[in-house]
Length: 441
Image (cartoon, rainbow, N blue to C red; front, side):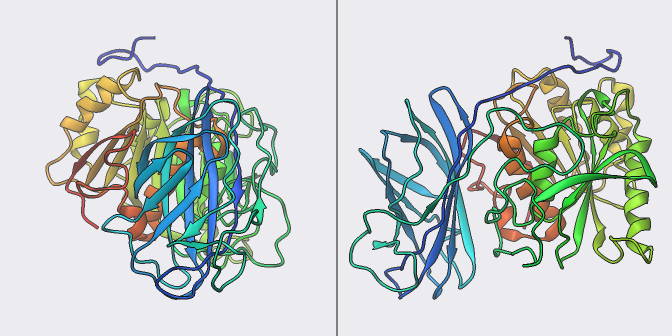
Protein backbone atom coordinates (compact mmCIF):
# COMPACT_ATOMS: atom_id res chain seq x y z
CA UNK A 1 0.00 0.00 0.00
CA UNK A 2 1.08 3.59 -0.51
CA UNK A 3 2.55 5.39 2.47
CA UNK A 4 3.20 8.97 1.44
CA UNK A 5 2.67 12.49 2.70
CA UNK A 6 -0.83 13.88 2.35
CA UNK A 7 -2.36 10.39 2.23
CA UNK A 8 -5.19 9.39 4.62
CA UNK A 9 -4.34 7.47 7.75
CA UNK A 10 -3.47 3.95 6.70
CA UNK A 11 -4.37 0.52 8.03
CA UNK A 12 -1.51 -1.94 8.27
CA UNK A 13 -1.99 -5.64 7.68
CA UNK A 14 1.21 -7.60 7.77
CA UNK A 15 2.56 -10.79 9.25
CA UNK A 16 6.03 -12.23 9.55
CA UNK A 17 7.07 -15.57 10.93
CA UNK A 18 10.47 -17.20 11.03
CA UNK A 19 11.53 -20.61 12.21
CA UNK A 20 14.04 -19.85 14.93
CA UNK A 21 16.72 -21.77 16.74
CA UNK A 22 18.09 -21.02 20.17
CA UNK A 23 20.38 -22.32 22.86
CA UNK A 24 22.05 -21.07 25.98
CA UNK A 25 25.33 -22.18 27.43
CA UNK A 26 25.93 -21.41 31.09
CA UNK A 27 29.57 -21.95 31.88
CA UNK A 28 32.28 -20.95 34.34
CA UNK A 29 35.89 -20.04 33.53
CA UNK A 30 39.01 -18.29 34.78
CA UNK A 31 40.75 -15.22 33.45
CA UNK A 32 44.46 -15.01 32.81
CA UNK A 33 44.70 -11.83 34.87
CA UNK A 34 43.45 -13.52 38.06
CA UNK A 35 41.85 -16.69 39.34
CA UNK A 36 38.28 -15.87 38.41
CA UNK A 37 35.07 -17.47 37.25
CA UNK A 38 32.47 -16.43 34.74
CA UNK A 39 29.12 -17.34 33.31
CA UNK A 40 28.52 -17.23 29.55
CA UNK A 41 25.03 -17.05 28.05
CA UNK A 42 25.02 -17.81 24.33
CA UNK A 43 21.54 -17.29 22.84
CA UNK A 44 20.52 -17.49 19.19
CA UNK A 45 18.15 -14.52 18.93
CA UNK A 46 16.97 -15.01 15.35
CA UNK A 47 17.47 -17.33 12.38
CA UNK A 48 16.67 -17.43 8.69
CA UNK A 49 17.66 -19.72 5.82
CA UNK A 50 21.46 -19.73 5.80
CA UNK A 51 21.89 -17.19 8.57
CA UNK A 52 21.35 -16.44 12.24
CA UNK A 53 21.89 -13.81 14.91
CA UNK A 54 23.26 -14.48 18.39
CA UNK A 55 23.83 -12.60 21.64
CA UNK A 56 26.61 -13.54 24.04
CA UNK A 57 26.75 -12.29 27.63
CA UNK A 58 29.81 -12.79 29.87
CA UNK A 59 29.24 -12.41 33.61
CA UNK A 60 32.36 -12.09 35.76
CA UNK A 61 32.06 -14.13 38.97
CA UNK A 62 35.58 -13.42 40.24
CA UNK A 63 38.16 -10.63 40.36
CA UNK A 64 37.88 -7.60 38.12
CA UNK A 65 39.45 -7.98 34.67
CA UNK A 66 40.54 -5.01 32.58
CA UNK A 67 40.64 -6.78 29.22
CA UNK A 68 39.15 -9.99 27.93
CA UNK A 69 39.17 -12.44 25.07
CA UNK A 70 36.52 -15.13 24.70
CA UNK A 71 37.26 -18.13 22.49
CA UNK A 72 35.24 -21.10 21.31
CA UNK A 73 34.89 -23.42 18.33
CA UNK A 74 31.84 -23.93 16.14
CA UNK A 75 30.79 -27.52 15.68
CA UNK A 76 28.99 -27.40 12.33
CA UNK A 77 30.93 -25.04 10.09
CA UNK A 78 29.22 -21.81 11.22
CA UNK A 79 30.97 -18.55 10.39
CA UNK A 80 30.62 -15.04 11.83
CA UNK A 81 29.80 -12.45 9.19
CA UNK A 82 29.31 -9.36 11.36
CA UNK A 83 29.94 -8.63 15.04
CA UNK A 84 29.32 -5.67 17.35
CA UNK A 85 30.66 -4.70 20.79
CA UNK A 86 33.82 -6.71 20.16
CA UNK A 87 36.67 -7.48 17.77
CA UNK A 88 36.47 -10.88 16.10
CA UNK A 89 38.84 -13.18 14.29
CA UNK A 90 38.03 -16.66 12.99
CA UNK A 91 40.21 -19.41 11.58
CA UNK A 92 38.20 -22.39 10.48
CA UNK A 93 36.01 -23.41 13.40
CA UNK A 94 38.06 -21.44 15.94
CA UNK A 95 36.60 -18.09 17.01
CA UNK A 96 38.19 -15.38 19.12
CA UNK A 97 36.34 -12.25 20.30
CA UNK A 98 38.21 -9.52 22.20
CA UNK A 99 36.95 -6.42 23.96
CA UNK A 100 36.86 -3.00 22.32
CA UNK A 101 37.94 0.25 23.95
CA UNK A 102 34.79 0.87 25.99
CA UNK A 103 34.02 -2.59 27.41
CA UNK A 104 37.33 -4.12 28.46
CA UNK A 105 36.74 -3.89 32.20
CA UNK A 106 34.34 -6.33 33.83
CA UNK A 107 34.03 -5.84 37.57
CA UNK A 108 33.21 -8.58 40.04
CA UNK A 109 29.57 -9.46 39.48
CA UNK A 110 29.45 -7.30 36.34
CA UNK A 111 28.96 -8.36 32.78
CA UNK A 112 29.54 -7.41 29.17
CA UNK A 113 27.69 -8.37 26.05
CA UNK A 114 28.33 -8.65 22.33
CA UNK A 115 26.28 -9.87 19.42
CA UNK A 116 26.85 -11.11 15.92
CA UNK A 117 25.31 -12.35 12.70
CA UNK A 118 26.51 -15.63 11.29
CA UNK A 119 26.09 -18.10 8.46
CA UNK A 120 25.14 -21.74 8.89
CA UNK A 121 24.15 -24.71 6.77
CA UNK A 122 22.20 -27.70 8.04
CA UNK A 123 22.55 -27.45 11.80
CA UNK A 124 23.47 -24.72 14.27
CA UNK A 125 24.55 -26.33 17.56
CA UNK A 126 25.50 -24.25 20.58
CA UNK A 127 29.28 -24.12 21.26
CA UNK A 128 30.40 -25.92 24.43
CA UNK A 129 34.09 -25.03 24.82
CA UNK A 130 34.16 -21.38 25.85
CA UNK A 131 37.39 -20.07 27.38
CA UNK A 132 38.12 -16.64 28.83
CA UNK A 133 41.61 -15.20 28.45
CA UNK A 134 42.94 -18.64 27.54
CA UNK A 135 41.58 -20.47 30.55
CA UNK A 136 38.99 -23.16 29.95
CA UNK A 137 35.48 -23.02 31.32
CA UNK A 138 35.29 -25.62 34.07
CA UNK A 139 31.97 -25.00 35.77
CA UNK A 140 33.53 -23.59 38.95
CA UNK A 141 35.65 -20.66 40.11
CA UNK A 142 39.31 -21.52 39.82
CA UNK A 143 41.94 -22.42 37.25
CA UNK A 144 42.10 -25.17 34.71
CA UNK A 145 44.90 -26.18 32.41
CA UNK A 146 42.80 -27.43 29.51
CA UNK A 147 39.28 -27.24 28.23
CA UNK A 148 37.01 -30.05 29.33
CA UNK A 149 35.68 -32.33 26.63
CA UNK A 150 32.18 -31.12 27.38
CA UNK A 151 30.89 -28.23 29.44
CA UNK A 152 27.71 -27.83 31.44
CA UNK A 153 25.45 -26.69 28.64
CA UNK A 154 21.82 -25.72 29.08
CA UNK A 155 19.67 -25.41 25.99
CA UNK A 156 16.06 -24.47 25.52
CA UNK A 157 13.55 -25.59 22.95
CA UNK A 158 12.43 -22.90 20.55
CA UNK A 159 8.91 -22.69 19.17
CA UNK A 160 8.68 -22.65 15.39
CA UNK A 161 5.84 -20.14 15.42
CA UNK A 162 5.62 -16.60 16.64
CA UNK A 163 4.26 -17.80 19.97
CA UNK A 164 0.84 -18.23 21.54
CA UNK A 165 -1.73 -15.50 21.15
CA UNK A 166 -4.30 -16.64 23.66
CA UNK A 167 -5.02 -14.51 26.69
CA UNK A 168 -3.21 -15.15 29.92
CA UNK A 169 0.39 -15.77 30.96
CA UNK A 170 2.45 -17.72 28.47
CA UNK A 171 5.23 -20.22 28.86
CA UNK A 172 6.98 -20.13 25.49
CA UNK A 173 10.68 -19.36 25.57
CA UNK A 174 13.30 -19.59 28.30
CA UNK A 175 12.21 -18.68 31.80
CA UNK A 176 15.41 -16.88 32.70
CA UNK A 177 18.52 -15.48 31.13
CA UNK A 178 21.11 -12.82 31.83
CA UNK A 179 19.98 -9.31 30.89
CA UNK A 180 21.63 -7.66 27.90
CA UNK A 181 23.49 -5.15 30.04
CA UNK A 182 24.07 -4.20 33.66
CA UNK A 183 24.55 -6.44 36.68
CA UNK A 184 22.69 -9.72 36.66
CA UNK A 185 19.55 -9.55 38.76
CA UNK A 186 17.58 -12.55 39.96
CA UNK A 187 13.90 -12.85 40.53
CA UNK A 188 12.81 -13.65 44.10
CA UNK A 189 13.48 -17.31 45.00
CA UNK A 190 9.81 -17.86 45.89
CA UNK A 191 8.69 -16.98 42.37
CA UNK A 192 7.88 -20.18 40.52
CA UNK A 193 5.24 -18.91 38.09
CA UNK A 194 6.26 -19.62 34.49
CA UNK A 195 6.60 -16.79 32.02
CA UNK A 196 8.42 -15.76 28.86
CA UNK A 197 11.17 -13.46 27.66
CA UNK A 198 14.95 -13.62 27.98
CA UNK A 199 15.22 -11.21 30.92
CA UNK A 200 15.67 -12.03 34.62
CA UNK A 201 11.93 -11.65 35.34
CA UNK A 202 9.86 -14.09 33.25
CA UNK A 203 6.82 -12.16 32.10
CA UNK A 204 3.19 -12.68 31.17
CA UNK A 205 0.18 -10.45 30.68
CA UNK A 206 -3.09 -9.60 32.34
CA UNK A 207 -6.03 -7.22 32.10
CA UNK A 208 -7.58 -4.85 34.63
CA UNK A 209 -11.21 -3.87 35.05
CA UNK A 210 -10.08 -0.34 35.86
CA UNK A 211 -8.24 -0.06 32.53
CA UNK A 212 -10.58 -1.21 29.77
CA UNK A 213 -9.24 -1.78 26.27
CA UNK A 214 -5.69 -2.56 27.38
CA UNK A 215 -3.31 -5.47 27.96
CA UNK A 216 -0.74 -5.23 30.78
CA UNK A 217 2.61 -7.03 30.44
CA UNK A 218 4.57 -7.47 33.65
CA UNK A 219 7.03 -9.78 35.40
CA UNK A 220 5.02 -12.72 36.73
CA UNK A 221 6.59 -12.09 40.13
CA UNK A 222 7.23 -8.41 40.73
CA UNK A 223 10.88 -7.65 41.56
CA UNK A 224 12.00 -5.43 44.41
CA UNK A 225 13.23 -2.81 41.95
CA UNK A 226 10.66 -0.32 40.69
CA UNK A 227 9.38 -0.85 37.16
CA UNK A 228 9.56 1.99 34.62
CA UNK A 229 6.53 2.19 32.33
CA UNK A 230 6.10 1.79 28.57
CA UNK A 231 2.81 2.76 26.91
CA UNK A 232 2.54 1.00 23.53
CA UNK A 233 0.27 1.37 20.49
CA UNK A 234 -0.03 -1.49 18.01
CA UNK A 235 0.49 -1.55 14.27
CA UNK A 236 -2.61 -0.62 12.26
CA UNK A 237 -3.81 1.15 15.43
CA UNK A 238 -5.17 -2.29 16.25
CA UNK A 239 -7.10 -2.92 19.47
CA UNK A 240 -5.47 -6.37 19.74
CA UNK A 241 -3.23 -6.09 22.79
CA UNK A 242 -1.37 -9.31 21.95
CA UNK A 243 -0.52 -8.35 18.36
CA UNK A 244 3.15 -7.89 19.41
CA UNK A 245 3.15 -10.43 22.25
CA UNK A 246 6.71 -11.74 21.83
CA UNK A 247 8.16 -8.24 21.58
CA UNK A 248 6.27 -6.75 24.55
CA UNK A 249 6.73 -9.75 26.82
CA UNK A 250 10.47 -9.61 26.16
CA UNK A 251 10.58 -5.97 27.30
CA UNK A 252 8.59 -6.73 30.45
CA UNK A 253 10.94 -9.58 31.35
CA UNK A 254 13.75 -7.05 31.78
CA UNK A 255 11.94 -5.20 34.53
CA UNK A 256 9.40 -2.93 32.84
CA UNK A 257 5.63 -2.53 33.05
CA UNK A 258 4.29 -2.47 29.49
CA UNK A 259 0.72 -1.33 28.83
CA UNK A 260 -0.47 -2.05 25.29
CA UNK A 261 -3.50 -0.59 23.58
CA UNK A 262 -6.21 -3.22 23.09
CA UNK A 263 -7.49 -6.29 24.90
CA UNK A 264 -5.86 -9.70 24.34
CA UNK A 265 -6.94 -10.81 20.85
CA UNK A 266 -9.19 -7.76 20.73
CA UNK A 267 -10.69 -6.21 17.62
CA UNK A 268 -11.37 -2.72 16.38
CA UNK A 269 -9.11 0.32 16.49
CA UNK A 270 -7.41 2.32 19.20
CA UNK A 271 -7.01 6.05 19.61
CA UNK A 272 -4.15 8.13 20.97
CA UNK A 273 -6.19 8.81 24.11
CA UNK A 274 -5.69 5.16 25.09
CA UNK A 275 -1.98 5.88 25.57
CA UNK A 276 -2.87 8.71 27.94
CA UNK A 277 -5.21 6.33 29.78
CA UNK A 278 -2.29 3.90 30.18
CA UNK A 279 -0.14 6.57 31.82
CA UNK A 280 -3.00 7.78 34.01
CA UNK A 281 -3.68 4.24 35.20
CA UNK A 282 -0.02 3.49 36.02
CA UNK A 283 0.32 6.69 38.06
CA UNK A 284 -2.93 5.98 39.91
CA UNK A 285 -2.12 2.33 40.65
CA UNK A 286 1.33 3.23 41.93
CA UNK A 287 -0.29 5.58 44.43
CA UNK A 288 -3.28 3.41 45.38
CA UNK A 289 -2.93 1.49 48.63
CA UNK A 290 -4.01 -2.08 48.13
CA UNK A 291 -2.84 -2.18 44.52
CA UNK A 292 -0.30 -4.85 43.64
CA UNK A 293 1.63 -2.00 42.01
CA UNK A 294 1.51 0.27 45.06
CA UNK A 295 4.95 1.90 45.25
CA UNK A 296 6.31 -0.64 42.75
CA UNK A 297 6.36 1.54 39.63
CA UNK A 298 8.78 4.31 38.65
CA UNK A 299 6.27 6.74 37.19
CA UNK A 300 8.97 9.37 36.78
CA UNK A 301 10.27 7.23 33.90
CA UNK A 302 7.65 6.68 31.22
CA UNK A 303 8.20 5.93 27.53
CA UNK A 304 5.55 6.10 24.83
CA UNK A 305 6.03 4.10 21.65
CA UNK A 306 4.19 2.63 18.71
CA UNK A 307 4.58 0.70 15.49
CA UNK A 308 3.34 2.03 12.14
CA UNK A 309 -0.10 3.58 12.74
CA UNK A 310 0.66 3.18 16.45
CA UNK A 311 3.66 5.44 15.96
CA UNK A 312 1.31 8.19 14.82
CA UNK A 313 -0.60 7.80 18.08
CA UNK A 314 2.67 8.00 20.02
CA UNK A 315 3.47 11.28 18.26
CA UNK A 316 0.07 12.67 19.25
CA UNK A 317 0.73 12.32 22.99
CA UNK A 318 4.51 12.90 22.96
CA UNK A 319 4.13 16.36 24.50
CA UNK A 320 2.73 14.88 27.75
CA UNK A 321 4.96 16.23 30.53
CA UNK A 322 5.21 12.76 32.12
CA UNK A 323 6.98 11.23 29.13
CA UNK A 324 10.72 10.63 29.36
CA UNK A 325 11.24 9.49 25.77
CA UNK A 326 9.27 8.73 22.59
CA UNK A 327 10.07 5.74 20.36
CA UNK A 328 8.79 5.46 16.79
CA UNK A 329 8.84 2.11 14.98
CA UNK A 330 8.37 2.12 11.17
CA UNK A 331 6.27 5.25 11.14
CA UNK A 332 6.26 8.87 10.07
CA UNK A 333 3.79 11.70 9.91
CA UNK A 334 1.46 11.41 6.93
CA UNK A 335 0.72 15.09 6.44
CA UNK A 336 2.98 18.12 6.67
CA UNK A 337 0.16 19.88 8.51
CA UNK A 338 1.00 17.65 11.47
CA UNK A 339 4.62 18.78 11.67
CA UNK A 340 3.70 20.82 14.74
CA UNK A 341 3.96 17.51 16.61
CA UNK A 342 7.67 17.48 15.78
CA UNK A 343 8.24 21.12 16.69
CA UNK A 344 6.83 20.64 20.19
CA UNK A 345 9.16 17.70 21.04
CA UNK A 346 11.42 18.43 24.01
CA UNK A 347 12.35 14.93 25.24
CA UNK A 348 14.71 12.42 23.56
CA UNK A 349 13.28 10.45 20.65
CA UNK A 350 14.40 7.28 18.88
CA UNK A 351 13.39 5.80 15.54
CA UNK A 352 13.71 2.12 14.60
CA UNK A 353 12.81 1.71 10.94
CA UNK A 354 12.85 -1.28 8.56
CA UNK A 355 15.23 0.17 6.00
CA UNK A 356 14.59 1.53 2.53
CA UNK A 357 12.07 -1.22 1.76
CA UNK A 358 9.91 -0.07 4.68
CA UNK A 359 6.91 1.84 3.32
CA UNK A 360 7.29 4.27 6.22
CA UNK A 361 10.96 4.99 5.43
CA UNK A 362 10.46 8.24 3.42
CA UNK A 363 8.13 9.72 6.01
CA UNK A 364 10.36 8.73 8.93
CA UNK A 365 13.39 10.28 7.29
CA UNK A 366 11.40 13.42 6.49
CA UNK A 367 10.47 13.68 10.18
CA UNK A 368 14.11 13.11 11.14
CA UNK A 369 15.15 16.12 9.09
CA UNK A 370 12.56 18.33 10.79
CA UNK A 371 13.35 17.58 14.44
CA UNK A 372 14.00 20.59 16.66
CA UNK A 373 17.60 21.75 16.83
CA UNK A 374 19.31 20.37 19.91
CA UNK A 375 16.83 17.52 20.47
CA UNK A 376 18.60 14.26 21.44
CA UNK A 377 17.62 11.76 18.73
CA UNK A 378 18.64 8.33 17.42
CA UNK A 379 17.78 6.82 14.05
CA UNK A 380 18.36 3.13 13.39
CA UNK A 381 17.47 1.40 10.14
CA UNK A 382 17.49 -2.40 9.93
CA UNK A 383 16.81 -3.91 6.52
CA UNK A 384 13.78 -6.02 7.50
CA UNK A 385 10.98 -4.08 5.81
CA UNK A 386 7.81 -2.72 7.36
CA UNK A 387 6.89 -5.90 9.22
CA UNK A 388 9.83 -5.62 11.64
CA UNK A 389 10.78 -8.51 13.92
CA UNK A 390 8.04 -8.27 16.56
CA UNK A 391 6.72 -11.78 15.88
CA UNK A 392 10.14 -13.39 16.12
CA UNK A 393 11.31 -15.23 19.20
CA UNK A 394 11.56 -12.65 22.03
CA UNK A 395 10.84 -9.92 19.50
CA UNK A 396 13.95 -10.57 17.41
CA UNK A 397 16.43 -7.77 16.83
CA UNK A 398 13.89 -5.01 17.42
CA UNK A 399 13.16 -6.58 20.83
CA UNK A 400 16.85 -6.73 21.72
CA UNK A 401 17.52 -3.12 20.76
CA UNK A 402 14.35 -1.75 22.38
CA UNK A 403 15.36 -3.36 25.69
CA UNK A 404 18.76 -1.71 25.44
CA UNK A 405 17.23 1.67 24.63
CA UNK A 406 14.76 1.52 27.52
CA UNK A 407 17.46 0.37 29.94
CA UNK A 408 19.43 3.45 28.98
CA UNK A 409 16.66 6.03 28.95
CA UNK A 410 14.46 4.70 31.75
CA UNK A 411 16.98 2.96 34.03
CA UNK A 412 20.10 5.04 33.44
CA UNK A 413 22.15 2.06 32.23
CA UNK A 414 25.23 3.67 30.67
CA UNK A 415 26.51 0.40 29.22
CA UNK A 416 23.25 0.02 27.35
CA UNK A 417 23.51 3.65 26.24
CA UNK A 418 26.86 2.99 24.59
CA UNK A 419 25.00 1.02 21.94
CA UNK A 420 23.52 4.31 20.70
CA UNK A 421 26.05 7.06 21.44
CA UNK A 422 29.22 8.03 19.62
CA UNK A 423 30.99 7.11 16.40
CA UNK A 424 32.00 3.75 17.88
CA UNK A 425 28.56 2.92 19.32
CA UNK A 426 27.53 -0.68 19.76
CA UNK A 427 25.10 -0.55 16.83
CA UNK A 428 27.50 1.44 14.64
CA UNK A 429 29.18 -0.61 11.94
CA UNK A 430 26.69 -3.47 12.29
CA UNK A 431 23.68 -4.47 10.23
CA UNK A 432 22.04 -1.30 11.60
CA UNK A 433 22.35 1.95 9.67
CA UNK A 434 22.78 4.55 12.40
CA UNK A 435 22.30 8.31 12.61
CA UNK A 436 22.62 10.40 15.77
CA UNK A 437 21.77 13.91 16.92
CA UNK A 438 22.87 15.54 20.19
CA UNK A 439 23.43 12.25 22.02
CA UNK A 440 25.60 12.04 25.14
CA UNK A 441 25.88 9.55 27.96
